[in-house]
Image (cartoon, rainbow, N blue to C red; front, side):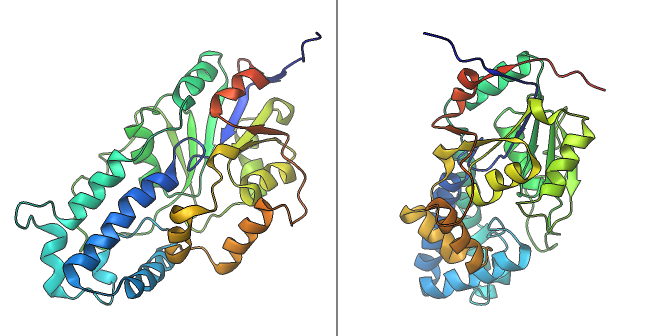
Length: 296
């Protein structure tokens, strides 16, 4: 049987959330207990809280600012102690929430070893994410990806109110080797201009580059518009089930964003198929021959 010739690739651009790590699982396993405990300890109706969290997330442009509880209209000062103080030997609500985020943050199977393999071949690895710099740095450091990923393009975060308790200093999660390039805080995918800028910044050859991402309507569409080989991380594209339904209720996305994603998933919108589709991240090694990137 004739062996299929692999494409030579030396420049890898990847999404992070739901491509490198399971963001949706981490989010659900932390936000759902957080929401339920607030309901349990305050007696506030869960549907009211969902609407208030959605407004909070829309204000900050991310579903990750749930810890700014003092901006929820239903949370008056009498409830503040249960969020930050140990009561009857139980963790405070915020402590439990943050612990659940940390304990449920995991890379998909095969991701770390595959990235190390690609790195060892001398290829350049760059990430482009919509998640803001603070959360991105924390996750890269927590998962041991500092030094493996060369550069990350990530939006500047919104200013966190001074009233929010900070367990760590602002520079605690700074990375030692992975470079952070900050984008405007409103950055959203698809953004062909930024993808082309990344290629230009490194003087990379598009014919030897790939872009990996889980969202058809954002990641894959963007790669196709930029003329970069598109690789769909199908394993991370989940838009059904309890986790996604809760996310839709409290997300900062507009209703149009949610509907657009559904349309792309069902292929009702006109988009060419991805160049490659991954059932798992380590399939990259069987699809491409990774080679040394020559820095300009």
